[in-house]
Image (cartoon, rainbow, N blue to C red; front, side, top):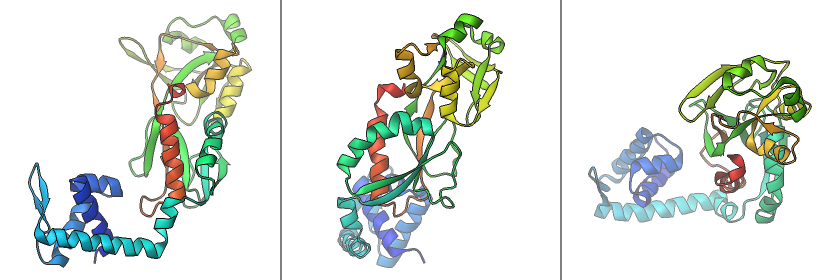
Length: 298
């Protein structure tokens, strides 16, 4: 038997959003599953609740009555769980995992504003570049920069992340700056094992190039990638937000400015869309707001 409270939520969302598809997206379920819940609602009511067409949806008289009762049912259910109070004031500790370079350059500088907005939320920050097991490691949210995402994971895109090719000035003086992408194959490069590895995708004005690069170092830790570039070990592809302050101070120099590395994305990964704690939702929403339109990420 399908859960009647979930069915009530699907019905309410469908009416308020105007379609089962929009309701399914809001509730984190498939369109087919949302339709099953709606059909179950009509079976329990013993009558048609919605009049549907390809362009329009309206409530039947029985649907008007059912909508009011569903809202009462959900209100009672949320009152029992304490969700209403938690929604008004997010609170509690959330365990968040992310790469050190992201924590240092992005998350920590924005944390005072988050703490001021949500003073009853505390963060247990786990710094790691590896892909964590959310359940086993007891992680509420994992922030990850990537170009591809497994369809099986539950994630929300926080924003695009641009990258830049750069190197220490002393290194470029010694090896000469590459003039074309193919010249990277003859220069020492530092690569990041988590995405791209030794194949870099560069976008020019009229074409895209995939270049196989080699060099003295590959690492799975993004902060070490930045440190290695500053030490003059090789040319690196770095997130713009991490490289920007060093470029501004002249500690790094942009390489191949006419070519742009393929854009990546920053995602928040979490274990389940159902019953997402208010503190977790507040953290994700806050960083969507701060990162989405921030030019430093491009």
